[in-house]
Length: 509
Ligand code: ADP
Image 1 (cartoon, rainbow, N blue to C red):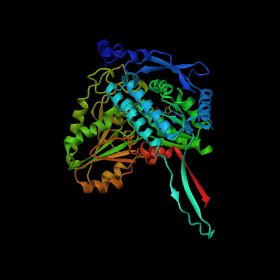
Image 2: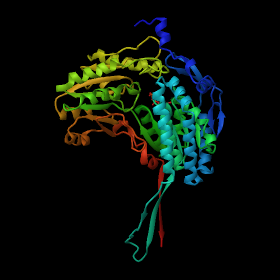
Image 3: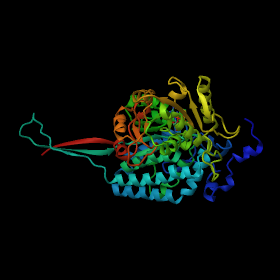
Image 4: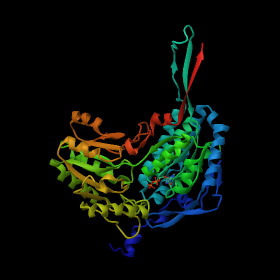
């Protein structure tokens, strides 16, 4: 596909449209936050952060190595062992968290724009999922700080007749948490990790993805203003194989909270085995959407289309496999194709853009490679299939038909706007196909027959089953995967459980 110079500039962000706060922040040479101090990497090395609409450098950040990770973990350790944070009254921690939420809300425009330029997602998308939800999650988790509690027991202890005992449990902070986050919803993912750490009185080192570190660093600038003691939240920037690997292996870390690829999830489980660190893993997905013959097309067509094309398909729980009953397959798939063709690709900052570029040129190549592999194995390209320009990391919303279960495009997580569509003949066939990947993050059922829906839910291997909707997450509702999609749950009370250890106390009375 040939692009003219005019096409190319039309697909690049116009950075002069940024608010002064975002424009002033972006071009800086940024620093990490370690022990409350703005800190360079020990080597002084930095790396570039780019705008995926143009491939242009927009900022530079420190390139942390093992030595910097050591400094950051030691700061978190000191803050945990002897700092005020874990010893503060829960209501004091709650107040600091509420202040942090207020500050994030105050600077919402700058955060949304910085995230949009860096990640390629539109400003309203970044505003909703990185900023507004993060503000809400800090407030939600602030409420938990005062509600962490154990249980009481009246033990019988039959082998000590005549004696009486009383037992209770305490929920104590798990300790120093290493949080490693991906680039798809950068600030949102970071706050999913930060909020339960703060509520439970833990301390942490956060390493955002190397592609999208800017909003985490901007968030770091709010910590002191909110009254957070130094060393409680340390933010380091660096590459996965170096900074990330040093963090997961560090003996000063008590728990790893990771969101990212299943491949790195395996490495974390292996690294944790030597010290029995705790870990929660939110990994890849290949979520199935099952459309029954009685499904309402008015809901199902836009719902399933947005399940894959929302956030450019860069969602771990994206509905990337569509299974439709053969009776309505053609009409549903045609509707989804029309929806895809109506999506306006363009630069993230432009108000009439529905979908920006993918996060990076590398990700664009990866996604296009998957599409090519599907087509070469016999899949039919029903729409899309190309980068929209030779410039910028754009990929057209794509639907593939005529796929087989053994194809890579059906089995592997593409993490881009690519849907595979397959007809099914009966419910057993649908369930068999839906469960036939190594993943188990989400699944959705599109149907009106409530009894059928209830009978289907237990048969699906997934951490979340949606009905007549997809990708709906709430801060109070646990989220996570089964099979190779992860271990543990984020959000809600589950996040509190995963950041605390139970201590049992038994006393003779
Ligand atoms: P993706 O392929 O989508 O970038 P990754 O799992 O590679 O997913 O990245 C998610 C996060 O994991 C990023 O913050 C990245 O730096 C980090 N990461 C990548 N490789 C490693 C590793 N070997 N050890 C620890 N963290 C890693």
